[in-house]
Each structure stands twice: as C-alpha cells, then as structure tokens.
Length: 593
Image (cartoon, rainbow, N blue to C red; front, side, top):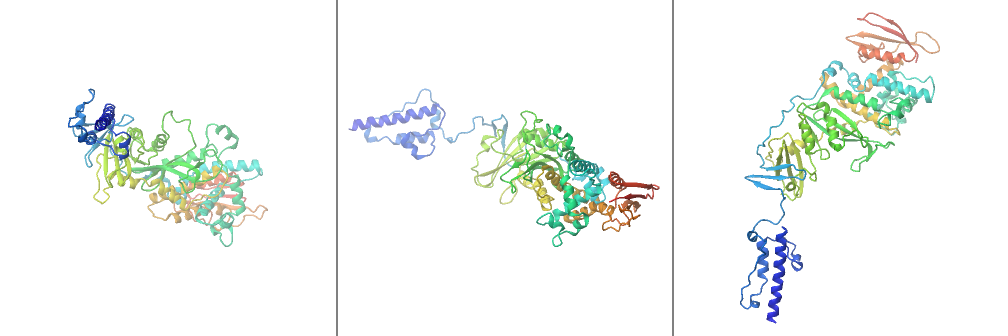
C-alpha cells in the first residue's frame, strides 16, 4: 500500500511539474490544475514550487530524495523570479529612469513624475480678451443696431420677399407685408419668450395678455404672417435640396453664422460642444438623445467664447456629410470647421471625450492652437498601463508624448478621469485634500461655455410649438442673435444691463418703426386727407446726431437704417414726395396702411 501511495504521489508531482513547465514555456502564469483552481489566486513561480514540494509526504518516500529535473528548454533563472504575475504591456520597457510604452496606434508614451517639466515648449498663448471687431464697434450704439448685426436688413428683406411670394401664390395676389411689420413680428416673438402664457391666444387676452404685444400688432395679423413665413425661394428649393438638406433656410442661416464670426474676436479659451434645440418637427435630421432633458430636437455644434458666452460659430448636424474627407472622424471635422476662423492665433479649445483625440491635438497644433479635453480610455492612442481604474483616491499619473500630455486622475476609488492637453508643459497638483492636477482644474473651469450659453438661451427662449422645422431653426437663430446682441451692446457701449431688460427694450425698438408707420401709440399725425384709404404722413428727420422716424418716435435710427426701412415701405403703397438738404433732411411721404 505504501508503495502504491508513493507512486500516486510521484504521479501527482509529475503532473504538476509538467503543467508548470508547459505554462513557463508558453509565457503564461502558472495556475494549479483542477483541484487547486478553487484557490482563485495567482502565484509566483517560487510559490508554485513550494506548494508542489509541500504536498510530498516524507513518510511515503522511504527516506529517498526526490530530484526535480527541469525541462531542458526552460530558463532556470525563472525559478527564482519575484516579479508580479499581472501581465505587463509587451512593449513597455525601462530605459534608465524613464518608463516608456507604445500604445496600440504606435504612439510612444513616457511616464513622468508629477511636477516634472516636460521636454516640449507650448505655443505662445493668445493674450487679448474677447472683444467686438472694429466693424461692430463702429456701427453699434443701440440695442436694435446690435441685433441687426446678426439678423441684418438684407436678411429681413429676403425673408420679406419670400414670405410675400408664398402668400401671393397661396392666398391673395395683393397680400403684402412691409419691412417694419416684419420687425414688429420679431418683436412679438421675443416678447412671447418673456411672457410665459399657456398659449398664443393668451398673449392678446384681457387678463393674461402683454400690453406691448397687444399694442404692436393684432393677433390675426400675427398668425397670418406666421402662416406664410418663408426663408427661401420655393421655386428652386427642390433642386437645392438634392445637395443641401438645409435648403429651406440655408441662405439666411449662412448669413447669420457669417455675421457671428465677423462681429466678435473671442478670447483665449473657446468651448466646443453640442446643443439640442428641442423640436418634434418632421425632418430627416431630427435627433433623439436619451440623455438630454427634451430627448428630441435638432442638433447644432457650437463654439462659444468662455468668458462672455458669445456664440462664435455654429453648425447644424444634418447626418452623414458627403463632403467630409474619407477616413476623417466626424468629431475632428466638426472641431476644425468650427475653429477655422480662429486658428493660428494661439487660442485653446476645450472639448469633451466625444471630440478629444491625439490626432486632433496634432492638427490643431499645426495651426497654432492647443486643446484641453477629457478623452475616452478606449481610444487606441491611450497607453495600456493608464487604462486600469483601480487607483487610490486622489492619485495622479502623468504621461507625455510629442507635444501633448495625458493626465489620469482618480477623484474616487475605481473611477479615473483622463485629460489630454497640448497646452501644459508641467502637470502639478494643488495643496487641497483632493490634490487635483492643474489640467483637471482648468478643464473644470473651461468646459462649461456651451452649457451655460444653452441655459441662458433657454431662460428666455422664443421657442414655441411648430410643425415646420425651418421655423424651429429661425427661433433658435433669434435666441442666439439676441444673446450675442446683448454681449455686443454691453461691450460697445460700456453699459451693464440685465438681459431681460435688454430684451424688453430691443423688442420695443423693433416694434417702434411699425407702430410709427401705422400710427399706433406714437403720436402719429392725423391723415392729410379724408380719402377712403386714410392716408398718413411719414416723416424722417435729423436730430442730435441720429435720424428719427415719426414725429414722436423714441428710438434713434441711423440714416442708413431709416432709408432701408423706407425702401421696404416702397415695395408697398408708399409715395416719396420730398428730400431736403443733407444737414436737415426731411422726407415726407404718403403711407397707405
């Protein structure tokens, strides 16, 4: 029995040894077979040998020594190895005191000590704060002028023309809308955003109605204009829609975006993010985003100045873009298009993990622009050793590569935040309890530009229910134009004004020209004659360095604006009669309401 028992022990030991050397040859960690797998722990080679030898009963050996003959192909030095069994990245190696590693895409990273100056020099940062352009400063002295920097008179003329075209084709051949009437229509749209009432009808009700809305335009006329409101030429839309999904409003929208770009110079930090404008209209690019409060809407990519929340550039998301180069990521394409007017100046762009990538950082650096943003750990350029999340709380790990740094920070155990930066040459932690790196602190400061802008827009949004997506886009355009106009007005005039007060005064100035022309609430003179059409007199004159419309108009209007208003009136039944000298110009005409 003893001999059989000894043979059984020898067979058992042989099985262990064969399994061990087989694992050693294949460069895998030794794990005991079957009965030892229940231990569920990884062992070093020394621990494995000790376990094998400890299982031999010295009473069964008859006092004989048992010699273990290793496989001739194995390395004896491995038997005394004390290294951890957790596999290290295959391409990671110690070079002196530096630890380098190659990521899946071939990027070579070097692990750095926190506080060490990295071997690259950041580009020179943009030094100026955000400010209006010289063109904007020259033309802005009132709220109306700041608003017309973005939705210009040329744009309003186009909307007027296409709205009249649609109304005359579908309703009545003599249907007409003057330019001041369109401006009054926009004034009511803005006031509706300030007046929170259940429905459109309540804006004109005796109990809930807004007196400014009631005094500007009758409800039926407002609804009539809304029904015919158009932003493009219907006769050519079908041809343009073949290559442009935004054809129904792309002309007006393009002018608005150009005006946003040319009216303001943003500061050092620009934030890029998405905006979902709530809408359930039927269109091929309507988005559903479950994480958003409104779920459904039209998505816009937005670039905002961090300090002022000025909307620098904006792009609608229309689905797959055939003009995007093959192989280029959507995220990189969006950021480069949004930042194109502001590159080569030393600015920084802050993005979230949808946009941030090392290839984007290199593209921006080639245009003298840096990036700061969270990055997803599953991206191929992230080193394998940075991906583990089992870090101690408030610990930081720093990696560097060509002109970029990667910060892995653990705000809590088993949660890691990854920050990619091309603007930091030194990663330092603060002296607080959380020991935050400077990259994380700066990202938390600069990431909120678009989110805060969206909150400001939503507070007084003109959005209301509509079945036509171009109208929904027009609402968003008015919201953005009003926000930018407020920023521009304060910067150009030096006056600080609450946004709600600015919007009320802007609506009044927009409605003022229509009210004067129609003889409503502005002391307009009585009819010149008692004909059946009720002729009224329109007077434009120069006073205190500004042109005014109507004898009792409150708003100052530049001569260029007054003349454009009259050109809009001339499309209707307006008869110019007299033009006096340049210094004291009085233009008198007959207007038939």
